[in-house]
Length: 392
Image (cartoon, rainbow, N blue to C red; front, side):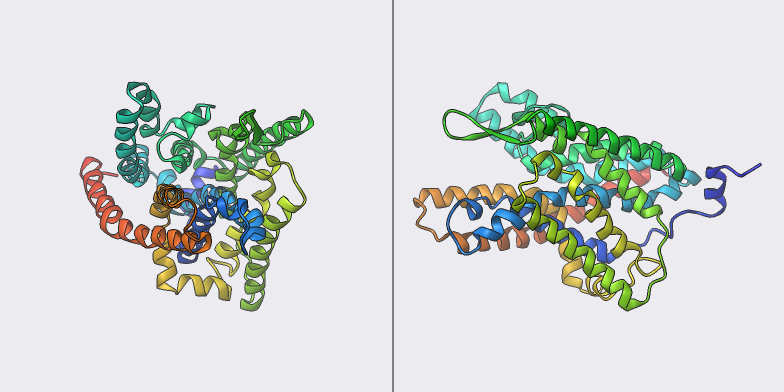
């Protein structure tokens, strides 16, 4: 009789000891920077030297969210899968640790905005604000709900769903996980094909006042937690793929090719006018997976190429990667403030220097928030959780 999957895990743990994979931490900074660039929309709308790049590479920076979701599946597998399957950490402690990882900074950003909404809009803002603070907003298929308060926080709602699903996904055999991933992929594929074939492939449409508004396609293909679970599961599968023992030069070539393919797709897709419904997730899925696999496994262990080595051994990039969660949450309010300042001065502030300074301020402030706010909060919450779950 063949041993069960769980028996094999207990005898031969699937993951290495959960050490940090620094090159992937550094890559998180570039993913957050891509999201930030996608929100500097005046660069795409107004004439400036960077407009061609802003309409392609910068605009497609929203794909950085797919990287975060996929990397989350990879890192949680590395850190928690063996612990959960071997029973060295309880499901309750695991979930509490994951909530403590994302909720405090989300609340620190969201509560002031909720108070501001209450003061300016009134009590009608309370249902949306409370839904947002509870990290449930991405389940509501209305733009004003899932983009309430701090807009990027919708992805934390998805992450909370992924964390919860991981309690079950971690115990699946590779074959069952592949089957579940295939089911998610086919469901997403069928949805996108249906949307495009019925003329609903765009995520925006124009309204009479000249503005554009987001369509239901945006929620279905980019926001909704269940379709986006595919990213997370792919990350888990990438983690379970074997690492090939490549020579350093070959591993470096693979890493460079993975990055080049991803950047090439970010330029080509808008130029080819690939429908939004494809670009929101599915079209970037293989390139994101290749990047994470090549930087995670290309040396037969974790990172064997020169690019991985550079990213892992550059303290500034690792620090910026650690601060990427703070950057992701604080950058859009800073951008809104900068653009409001430019409107106040009737567009007299030069666009390129303003965007550059705004990005630098957001990056610098993210490091301060990480060191002075996020790290102390994490340390305190982990001590409290350790006392609440003394036996794991």
